[in-house]
Length: 461
Image (cartoon, rainbow, N blue to C red; front, side):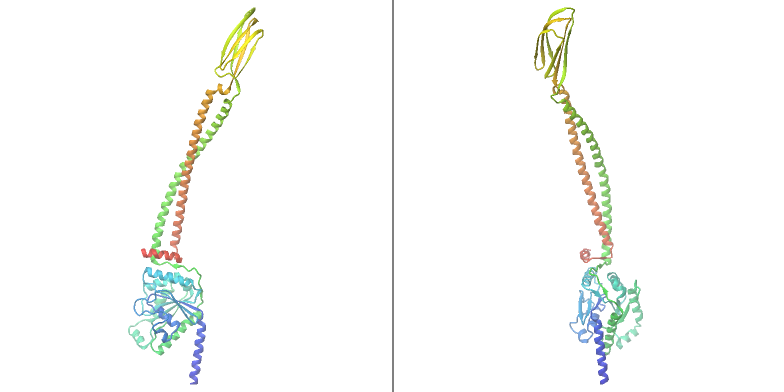
């Protein structure tokens, strides 16, 4: 009895020591549907018969071929945290929903101590298994680099099961090797593995597999280092998502070609407005110079300055003294503003009568050898050059109308140029959007938001 008591005490101490090692340990369970993830999670948390065989275990266990785990579930006991996940072979949409949920849950955690890949011992290494392994490799590359264990579930060790495997000539080493081979692809190490029965029958068998449970936990504690998780884990893309992405890439590339062609066409169209604008600007410069010259001329002509318009002269000769009386009417083409008179003297009487368009002259006197006189008529310039002023004004009006037409044409061409430039900018923006779409589609993972948007496309597909 003393010996049994000592052994029992040592066993209790060992259990307490092992429990202290599992404190703050987080284990992620992954695998295909119906491969024993939930049952293993229950066994890791509490291997007692009361827990694993009761009606309400921590993680519900499937009793048929239909999967029981529908969502990511987290449970803990004595500091040990176990994350049970749905299988990833229930259909494209269902699997993708599960993937999003798994990533969301992992983003809530700080670290993962180990990732346990559950493989039912008597299951085949099929396409579903390979797809699950490949997906998690892309989702959690850090874990797969160092912290993966493969646990073969449903490995019964009672005499009947051993005899059955022997009769069926089941090669246990080959089964383990095939499963590990798929996991080891691309890794620099070969993951550790364990064989366990999470529903053991009989006390001896239960104790045997409970020891295997402790070996799993000891291995995680002593040989694996926790991997810190950043808070922005992304959802790895599945084959169905990549197929949709390929269609999006093809569509975006086609649209980019169309937009580039539209830009080339717009650039070609921009040359015409630009050329016309330059031509009209040069034309406006020439018009401005001509208008400036005509305005200066008009200022000179259309003024009240006086200018000689007519010089009338009298030049009569004779050889003796002679009393002479003369009358003249000197007419002007324009209204007379002023005049001046000159003669050679000896005029005794002189009468100059200025009218609007003429001047009447009466002279009388005794002249020797002749009469010489000169009348100079002056008019305002605007009257003298009225015809030319009207001509210049008409030319100015025509030039100003031409200038207005050219200016309007320049504005219209500028608007056309700006419209084409805006169109080019719009197409360039569209190209950048499509390039961003292609860049996003070519990535192997996506954000939670992008994944939820993609889920709608998967439903439509």
